[in-house]
Length: 286
Image (cartoon, rainbow, N blue to C red):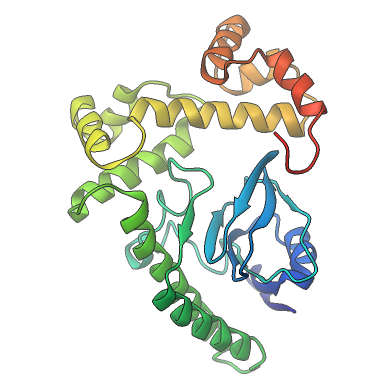
């Protein structure tokens, strides 16, 4: 099953696929945000940015267009893929509606996975069934109906993520601080390397950011910045032929040796050792 809705006038796309057409849908949606839901009773094995990820039964993986996803699915795999581009639904423009930017997408966890309980499974399965029917209903209201149903899926996933990915019962203000910081890091990590840089943009003190993250998040603000730089370095080392010096410059380091030391400190591997190890990767091993 591969369901598609496209509007050439504005360049919008929204796809839904099952395991049979999963790989084809991935190829057709390089610039999409994605939900990948494993509805099976056994795990599904994926590679995300060269690293293995096991998606256990009734887990949902949230991915951005920056991530490289490959897979080898079993014949009885039961995956649902929902993918959409910015023209169909922009999570930044409509952040007040779904509040997922900086949490499900472009957050401090770059491969966020949420666990769906039995109650939510029934709810999401019903939603997927209605989506499938709506993809087959061709009329003037179809696009808006599909958008409403997608928003419902995003909101439900965001509610689950808040409970599972953040510590404690947070007031909205503190959730928004974490999300805003994560989004700013995604936008500026190549040029801004210090917590104080982001605190200034947010009109907060660095101490406030550190306290909020220490109480409610799994990483410190500085770790979020460092992890995002390392993630981008890994992607370029794996998926491009750029030299270490070129990568250092791309990531805002004028001194390549400083970048090399930073990379080794945060990965416990030299850049050359990382390249050599990646050459030996087989699916499911890293």
